[in-house]
Image (cartoon, rainbow, N blue to C red):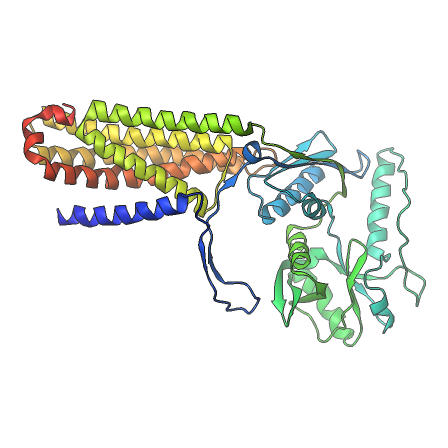
Length: 477
């Protein structure tokens, strides 16, 4: 009995915490401890509920490949879509929809996004990073910061695109663009030492009262960048993004494994640039064909009706368990309420973006939670009919039903894993929400259907042992 009382106390405390987290008014807490000196708290607990595009609306962007069809492959377009997906995921937008449309377009849907400019700039920018040789320019290097320049790498890419278009028999129309400056010392394009392909990792950091981007080199990048910087100490080196000079720092030492990018960045600019470098350059330049802010496709009234239907369904299940199984049904109902509270808390703690498919997965998991209790109670009833005592029936019911509950839940969790992996492909991400909520419910069910229900039922049996032993109908027999 003491064992079950300890479990009861733990369950009550866990349920109180889950209910507190689940409340809409709960914004979390944070501890003002700044270990790294970046001005922001390092310990922050701020659970938040995220809703999908079909519930709260958001931003829809249609991207068009700027290259003529035939000058790139469908695999190039899919790679561009994958890079775009990584960028919007790193922006903090969960459950984005990124899918290829036809052979030249990419559709991006960002739930809850309200600032189209930041999102579009991050998605669209090709992120061609170049480390350009500015040797011999001296003070002139600083004057080129913020200016657009012409480099050997840019010329190479343009020649490759023209050659691909010519091979496909497509005429390319050159559009006028901003003037690009050449090297004033030679009158030729600036020499690109290395591109962003030589980077292995990049991260924004707050250092010495300014934001910088630290980076690490790949082995291939080290073979190029190390010897160049060792031979050019004291000379300026331009850091160029999409043709624009971000900064032109002076090389202080040989950079064989990595270094930093400086350029008077704001926090947002530094994090955005680091994100673009981590997610890779887009293999195809994209332009925004159209953008629109969309409202919730379900509408507030539909959301309200869906919530009402879910509540009614739960109430019906609670009544069924109580009427059919009596006292065990009360224990199952209490365990089901704990199950719902734990799920809602986990959804905010992860956090999980709730779309209509995700909510469907959660409701299905409620059904599996009830299934587990039904297996247990039917086993208990069978033991009682065979003449077992009440204590023996309780032990046998939980022990023998556990294997069936475990195996059925794990087999469904495996299916959820397959669905989740399938949902990582562009255009199928909405499947991930269903898989995640269903898997979370199945995992929590392993705890509530056995531990929580067992605890509640054993305590109720101890308190009502004589009436239950004499009146088997109270146990649903």
